[in-house]
Image 1 (cartoon, helix red, strand yellow):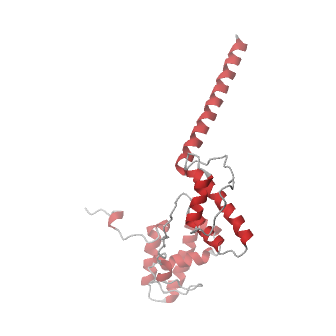
Image 2 (cartoon, rainbow, N blue to C red):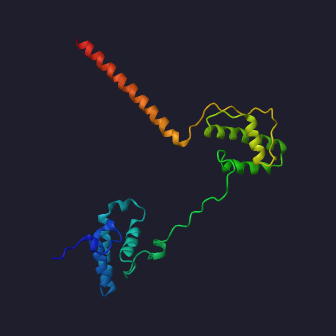
Amino acid sequence: MNFDYNSTREKLILAEYGRNVQNMVDYICTLPTKEERNKHAQVVIDLMGFLNPHLRDVSDFKHKLWDHLHIISDFKIDVDSPYPKPSPGAIHAKPERLEYPQHRIKYKHYGHVVEMMIEKAKKMQDPERKQHMAQSLANFMKMAYMTWNKDTVADEHILEDLKEISNSELALSEDVSLTKVEFKTPPPGNRTKVANNQNNQNGKKRNQGNNNNKKRQMGKRH
């Protein structure tokens, strides 16, 4: 006795329409006249729309159904479609290769954006604006440093890094006072832990409050 398993059948091209629809499309491809193929194709299109009502919410869903009909037939069906026939290359096009940045970041805790901003600041012609930009960059660098390092950092250290990254083109006086960072943002790996701890503490407070209410109610009954 021979059993018919899905694993031995031909692979479904669009599984959401089922094997019966695919068999009907294969049958339409074998019909001798285009008139018969057009007639049967319209019936299959209506059936496909009935099987997938969510497509009705898609703009121009009829166009999508006709595209699916061509895809299910492996682009072999010859019918008079009200829409242009899609090409296999457009349907099975591969995404473009994603290019990853290749530049090296000298100080990763400052990030590449800081290096880009420093390069832009170096090209400023107005000395006053250039000095203000250098001050802002130094403040931002201190904030970034404190985000990734738990220990405090001296302003002189930030000024030296700014001077080194800019090749001594952006320099601030040693007596300048950078903005003090009061709030330390935890690194990404610790943010979930902090949030979970806060939720646990809130849950304990709620449970304690519920227990106290139950005790009061029991005391009133007695």
